[in-house]
Length: 489
Image (cartoon, rainbow, N blue to C red; front, side):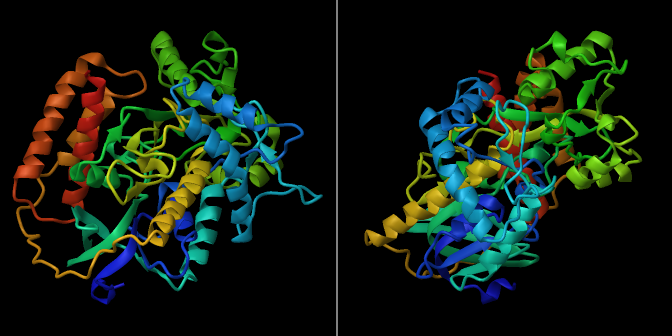
């Protein structure tokens, strides 16, 4: 969509089109005008790559809210916000069932009952899924539902370069190709996803550069626990920057984790073996690699057979086959890499940030749900629950006769300047990979922070051309600086 076709102002701007943003949009009445911005195509997000499914208590005979809460607290090192966890667990099932009304298809048995799988850290089978492409299924169906809404305008390939607080709302400077606009809104929901591209290797797509967190930080919102970074233990060990994820559900369905000698080793580190929480398994792999002086690790699920694996994990089966690995015959090479962010923009139970009228939901937000480590398949649940809560709170504000932002005059935008110095983003990634990987390097953290601070100052104070490359580099430098500053205390 050409930016010239957009209105001057909206009631709500949603930055991001993952599940948090999409589900928020679906919870506004038609009287509320909404502009949803996608940095790339609207289906591209961390949400769309989620494989495992959604964790929620739908079987109260064999499971309970208390069990799910306790599993979440154990995984999070009991650094979780208990009120947020209880809200997530108790309200989540209703939202999951509602996604079915929007057309989301979860796997069912011959009797038509929802099939629930097990993943690391869960004491019960409670994860509903769509084969191993649950996130894509949810995003695709929710996008279709949002596209039908007369009050929601979607703009793809549109990046928010900066955002400012103004009287009764916000001014967002947005960019589509070489076209720039300033759009005004009474409320804003940041649902911009994660920070994966601050690392050399990540499971995240190219859009995950922490833009929403940078925008909130620049406006003065509180950023909390950004150093709570999760590394997934079983990413496909390939040469690409974006690593192919081997879902937690593969271990949940019985895969063994092997070292370079093709031996199981988790019994040396945790009695839960392969089903320990992600942070435990990742640290165990790193310690085992140091013990043996070898970084070769594998998952073995060959004994399940080709027919089962093709049916249960069609995406993973096909993805590995592209890399020359037949998981019904071959071991799957794996190694930890960056996966998820538990910290982010500080929010309350209604997804409100510390700034008036600014909300955050999904991975860019810090609700306190996950503590220091996210329990598998709680992320999509969090996106649903707190995306909805953000919309509901905004509607309450509107119904209470809030003061709306008035149509304002756009100012001239100076977007010209020097090109971004080559290697800037590469340098940021290499610093983070060395200083703050699975087991942080305390000696490299302080020096890394100093180098990142210099990069950030250069980006802020230099006269660089405003384009996607520059904006993403600014976001990555901001994210890296906050993480290392926290870690250096």
